[in-house]
Each structure stands twice: as structure tokens, then as C-alpha cells.
Image (tube, rainbow over the protein chains, first blue to last red):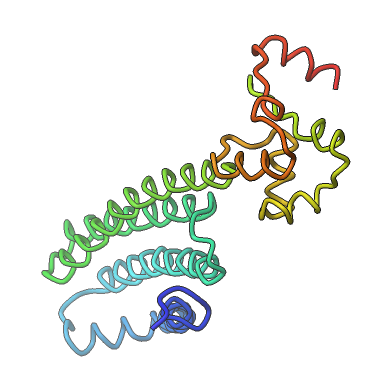
Length: 154
Length: 78
């Protein structure tokens, strides 16, 4: 199977990201209702403060997550045109790193107030995604330099 | 850069056009333009060989070393 290309794996992943973007939007818009339903079903003893905290927390982390998906979509567009080593992609990796590190920071704040195992897992995952994106971004920057050198060797 | 590519001079002497040379040395027109306009950072021996063969000249006819300060003043004239 072709890995990179409009009809290859990266093309499919881009469509998956489009779908994910749509789903995140739907989840974000219906959040006030779903959080209320969740609290009534599983944690009816928690007060109104908990509702607002969860709502704001999920909204912020959802928006950050949507930013990550949006940046990934941009990168896959350039991948599908078979031009992976561009300065734009280096910038995209840096943006993804910053967004993912913010997500992990917000999850860390949530751990202080309402601790749960899943929160720790997702926070750790976001932290490792952020650090990996930072490093892969630097690798891409070096790759861009090598590519420019190679392009100017006739 | 201190190395100047004098490809245009040799091409004028041999009365050969850019596209004709590109076909002879099997380079794209874009890459040959980069070389001719001194934008290239490096040159493969195989390319040098092909150009020397096509233009029937020596590498020294195409490449010239000019110390940096002289090259600077030349650029200002241009």
C-alpha cells in the first residue's frame, strides 16, 4: 500500500482527521448537556461548582485538542502533495508541541482538584505527545536544512 | 560566494542556448538556471563532467575563484 499520497495511507488519515474535527465540534457544542447528564447519572452528590469546573475544563482542553487536530490536518495536506520537509511543517510541529503541553498543564490542574486515574493517563499522554512533537520538529528543521542544501547542489 | 560560475560566458562563446545545453547535459532548465545565476551551493562532479563534455572546455573555464571583497564590489556594480 502507498504510505504517502492522496490515495495512500496519509490521504485516508486526513479524511479521518476531518471526521475527528467534526466530532470534536459536536462534542464541544453539546458539552453543557452531556456534563449535566454525566453528573446526574454518576456523581449526583457533587455540587454546582463541580459542574462549572468540569464544563470549563473540558471546553478549554477540547479547544486545545481541536487546535492540534487542525494543525495535523494542515500537515497532512502538505504530506499529500509529497512535500514533507517545509518550514511550515516545522512551525506546525512547534504549535502542536505548545498546544499539547498546554493540554497536559490543564490536566495537571484538574488532578489537583478532582483526581482520577484517567485524568493522569491522558495528562501523561499529552505530555509525551508535546515533548515528542518538540523533538520531531527539531528533526524536521534539520531535515529542511539538508533538503535545501541538496536542492541547491546541481 | 568566492566561487563564480562563468557558465554564461562559455555558453556565449560556444553560441549555445540554455535549453539546448540543458538537453545535452540532462539537467532541468530550472537547475541549470540556478547554476548559471550563481545561486547554487555545490556542484556534482558528474554535472561538471557533463557540462565540460557538452561545451568542450575545462572546469577552470566555467568556475573562477574571486576573493570575497572583490566579489562584493562586483555585485554592487551589477
